[in-house]
Length: 426
Image (cartoon, rainbow, N blue to C red; front, side, top):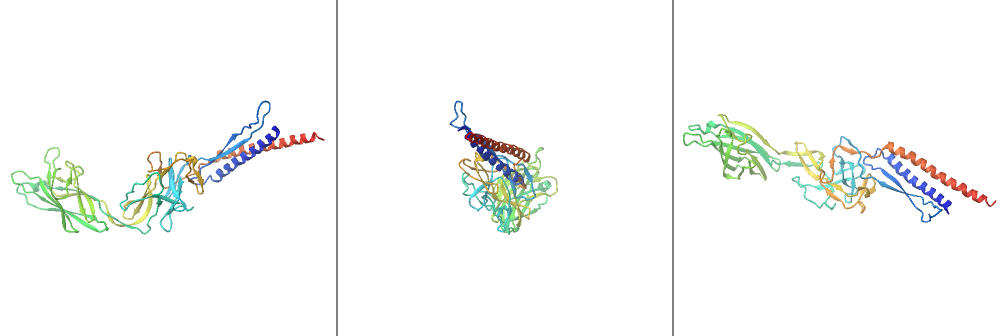
């Protein structure tokens, strides 16, 4: 009966608008919730199979609600280095139990009593652990199995051995002339071994005596490790005397020890348990070893490494590298946080605390390096704001209120019409 279908349509309208009101209420209530993704309720008309000819039977309306996970909120700055957000597409892997991984677009992570980075809601940041040298082993990108809680040693001490050194000194050209006094010049440089112990490397420069009337323009360089007393290498240095490259290195002949690499200008020295790239400059370079004038002048001496350091803070780069910062001024990668991407973010299952679970509707996930492929970068010192637009929600609230009242009026009208039909019997 068409009049009954009208009442059913009115009831369906009430239910649909009640659903829409619920999503609007959630959106408004979470307008200040970081990482909240607004919900949207859409209506779909239901057509009755009994409608034909001069009779129309109301089918009503059906409501479906969708969480718009693909929308991104504005990023706002904070003072905490491990407040993280995604700038662009993708999700941060988190876990409520340290094993099962869920997804989030933002989170305020801080170290707990065990040094694990967690939020106040108990969500743990997940990542791939780096080795002692700061490199991250390649892991399967279609699996979460290799991810583990990001944990920082609060009382962690670490050595920072020297791995590269560079030296540039000017040797006096007059010392290689005929009849010049043979004098050895020495330059001592500090380096740190794998235990954080300070040691020294001494470079000795002795001019090659001229055999004729012309200067030899050659020097013997000896590198001695003072910690072991061993000579690590001996080299014959020849300097250019041309008008265009005068005073620069033109040749390095290996007499003993590791070979000189003319492409890099370095000699790979074994100092303690470390291999140190000792750079003396390339051929023709004025930034390396030179032979000019009559004065020995130490130039720049640079090295990395430091004494043992203690942890002071943790930061996350935009490429997802979790770096431990030490009081000696160096840092080391301890974890890498990937960015998780799925083909259909709106198909994810909404969970508590602005997190999402994987579903078949979302599609197969992939773990990207932050900032590569479709994945966005991971931004520290930021939180993602709610995607709720208060003005839009209040406007929808007014529309929903009027629609609900109108559907209630339909039911009231049908009730009055049925009452008139009942009165026909009297």
